[in-house]
Length: 271
Image (cartoon, rainbow, N blue to C red; front, side):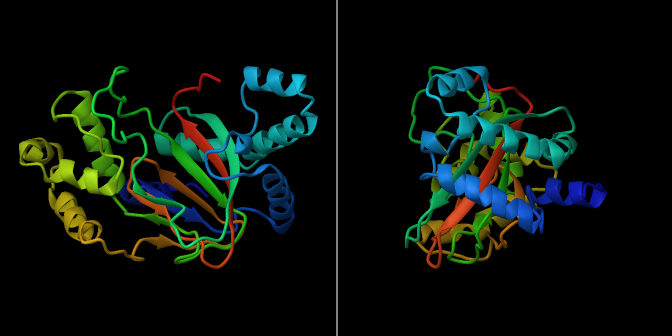
């Protein structure tokens, strides 16, 4: 599955889809597990047990089925060699930090709007310092229901992860001024800020990527939408993406979206 073409495509785009990652039997089993524990995105119930502390808490609560299923999902990732893929993408040893599964109901609202992870949302002053640009997650989405345009699919702007990294690095090293940039509109403001022009010009040997991104994301300032960046998937397909790129989860107009998610980074979590 992993070859130079795979790695080159991911390096360029920041995202890649692997079709038919799950067998029919694996799909049925995992969907039953995730559906049982899933909740809305971000709900603690949707997270599976990873660290010693959460293991002890669940033992004390007699949540033995969740412990069993958590171990199954962790071993499943090892058996499917997901960690091997993330090691190749990071080009160093990586660690599984989180596993969760959630269900997004039918809705005419985006699961989550255009945004960038490992950014800052409405925080004007930070006490804990800035994020090291290399401390980011690779996110693995395994779809357990069909997703498509305006029906829960992943939207990801190819190459935007390179811009996201440049912003994180510039802020971390004090070469550009900090400002929140979680939302796409704020992300664009940093790129369009004249005070930052020399930094980006020197960072990128070819400024074409920046110009192209600015031109193609005008829709957000015009309060318009686009389906140009949709990644449709069938049940059992997997998407791997760099969370530093601009992405969103679209509306779920036809059916609920059920997803199993693994998160990897080059740092161990403090669970």
